[in-house]
Length: 229
Ligand SMILES: Nc1ncnc2c1ncn2[C@@H]1O[C@H](COP(=O)(O)OP(=O)(O)OP(=O)(O)O)[C@@H](O)[C@H]1O
Ligand SMILES: [Mg+2]
Image 1 (cartoon, protein in one colour):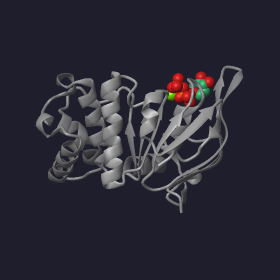
Image 2 (spheres, rainbow, N blue to C red):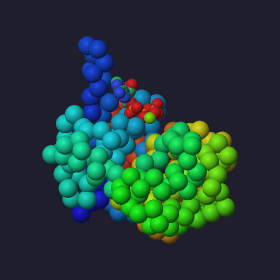
Image 3 (cartoon, rainbow, N blue to C red):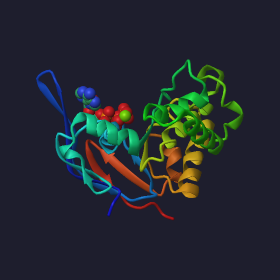
Image 4 (cartoon, rainbow, N blue to C red):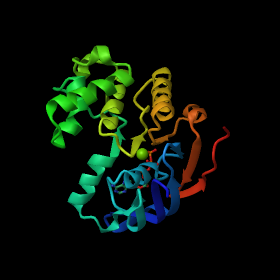
């Protein structure tokens, strides 16, 4: 059974009197442990697709099945609950809370879910160690570099042991070398801990690192072959 299945998924946005057809019928599945990139020009539908994979948004038609569970029947609260437990999200702009330390940011998803502070702290320190930031646990985001902030965001995405981490252009706000390090970090977490990553990029330099490249154009998958091993 696939970890995530999208079946005949479409996404339309209403803009005044016009309808934007962002996704025009997507059939796609992801397996456990995949390291996959969505690649395509601006406006091709990458963010729309990631938002459906991450249960951030709902399709206009078609089905999104997560770990065997059809998400179509869920109400907003149930979807949010499933997302908080099962999906890790990494944003282009990091989205850290500026008044919290790196450690507190990483603890937050667990704290919000009612985990005890000692347990959350232990899990967060472990994840900060895995992204190479054990020494920066008590620094706030404004005391960290862009690459370090994105590492904190990756640690935060992992702290709930999600089924999948989605990352929408996780390197877009980083210089090329730092962006490459972030992709390498995700790659090593994918290999060492079988974390499933689906990310989007329009940087062709990042594509060598992926197992699977899914090209998207004008709301359609144009090529989803496995990359050469
Ligand atoms: N909330 C929205 N309301 C209206 N139209 C939207 C909305 N979000 C996206 N769109 C439109 O849907 C299409 C796909 O957008 P999407 O953001 O998925 O593309 P993208 O591939 O992520 O682009 P980029 O590389 O610029 O991030 C575009 O035509 C966009 O203008
Ligand atoms: Mg986008």
